[in-house]
Image (tube, rainbow, N blue to C red; front, side, top):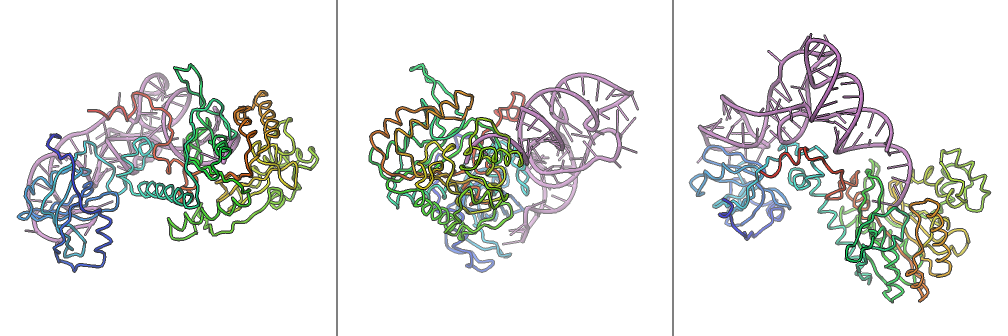
Length: 480
RNA sequence: GCGCCUCUAGCUCAAUUGGCAGAGCAACGGACUCUUAAUCCGCAGGUUCUGGGUUCAAGUCCCAGGGGGCGCACCA
């Protein structure tokens, strides 16, 4: 049967284009001379004796198709199509007596058949398990995922465009890493047979990208998948997409301007406004974003003086008071960060830049020019979620070696997320890294923000799921 | 990893206190020349997630396991 189906089909128009072109044209009952060829899935079918109405949907929209028996060969085939079958349609643009823009079919061609029923034609598919495991079904049975993923594509394309216009060069760096550096996270491990060597999947491209700046690439960025061996939640997927960019000769203050302009620009491009809705709250992404130090924000939130110069017992008392479980080895910096995350971060609607993190928790950021225990770092918080992380990059090889050694010490004491000493990276810094600013943006969370999506799984086409047992419903119904 | 909730026909959902497992849509057969989730007639569709247990009787109650959701923890 399928050998009789065509191998290609030349359509002349996207459906969405026809809908907007003829929106205010053609009187009810009028048929035009405009002849089009379109293709898509037959989503609704209303045969009515010797006439036929249906709805044909492609990825730009849905349009009614109409046929009258004497005017269409093989009329009988039409009513035998199943909902979901792919068909090609040729005909004239018309408007029905009731005013519905339609295509008056003069020929119809089957392109592919579906063997499985799709969801309820009104409600689609609501079973989240099925929606994630068989995204192809979700995408054609439900409307909103299609919109979200088309928006995601636009967002990523626009980021590339925006950065390239600023003179940034897109690069690709290794995913198989001998040392998983550039972030605090537990890595995945894999194995290369020929080298008989274990590799880590990267947790961040950071160190490679800065090596490129050492090499003279003054503005670089990478949009790529990173992998962190952590739990799943509405905000976390073990593999996710990170944008990192590095620019020579700028500091973190310059990057705030780039960051807020980029985010506002994306919102404007996608939604025609800088106002987005997050958790039923309206948030305006219009620059400039607020800029506050972590110390200020903690004080505003709980009225306690928390900073890296305070007596450690005072910080421990504050931690206890707010239910922060801490380790005796933590110094002021780590305590401060944990207190901030527990008491302050999730209450920040933003958009806001949180500035000046403790050096203790930022091993790759450059020491603050005004405070030896802080670094020049900011995170951008919107809707209580961390969206971006950036700093003036540490470019002193001796300082970097020292801080990596401290990290390695922590790792030796059981901190699975601490870094190792990356001698290749330190050697690169010895060749000279110019003053550089680096910015990372979580693309998945950015898409969530811009599309008003609550769960990260709804912005990732195939989110990580538990494996399903052999007797499961998916196995049971497939491959007949 | 811990806690709470959830799983019934291809899809969306019912099933009273533990008392014969149902409807709409889809599929299948038929009618219908302007429908809009078309309508009408007919037909068929089940390991109630799995395995145990209590009971005269379990979709319903109990135990264990699996999938999913939410919250916490970890993190971006």
